[in-house]
Amino acid sequence: MGHGGDVIAELTHDHQEVEQLFTKMQGMPSGDPRRKECADQITMELVRHSVAEESYLYPAVRKHLPQGDALADKELEDHAEAERTMKELEGCAADDPQFDGLMMQLMQEIRSHVADEENNLFPQLRQACSAEMLNELGDKVRQAKKMAPTRPHPSAPDTPPANKLLAPGVGLVDRLRDAMTGRGKG
Image 1 (cartoon, one colour):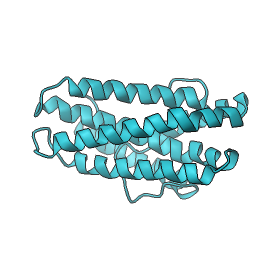
Image 2: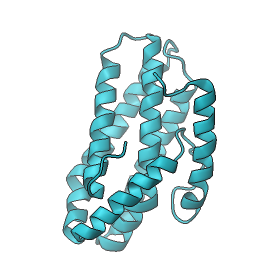
Image 3: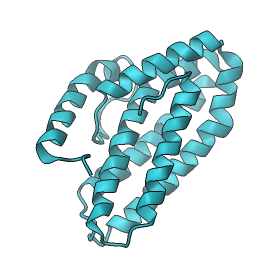
């Protein structure tokens, strides 16, 4: 993930990539070990995306939109819910009886969140912010995704400044763990 363009184009492209991974997974038979590899890739992409949104998008929403605090709080609640599901999924093998149910739950949570952002939040942000500001946010989001964690950490802070301070260190540890285990290479 890291495509260029303003923050809305960047995040919308992320949404499309995750949807493609969901579709790929749905095409695999239940219990197939490749489903776990795909779930790990989905989790990695979603965590990086969420950390970037929490660091830069939602503070901009709070600052520039009427009812920005309520909108950002709703999006953070969505992230927390999905992160708890991803954490449960992390401990499941593809043939675990809970795996398919958790994966379906995650897909529903993410699809609902994406629809809300793309149909509600993004149009409001595009109207309220200059093209220059949206481009700057796009650059910041891309940088944040490079340093972000790749595993769910439901108890980690999700608002600045704590999340911006902790995410790079947690991200480094996650990327080291991923390299040692081969996670995300499938």
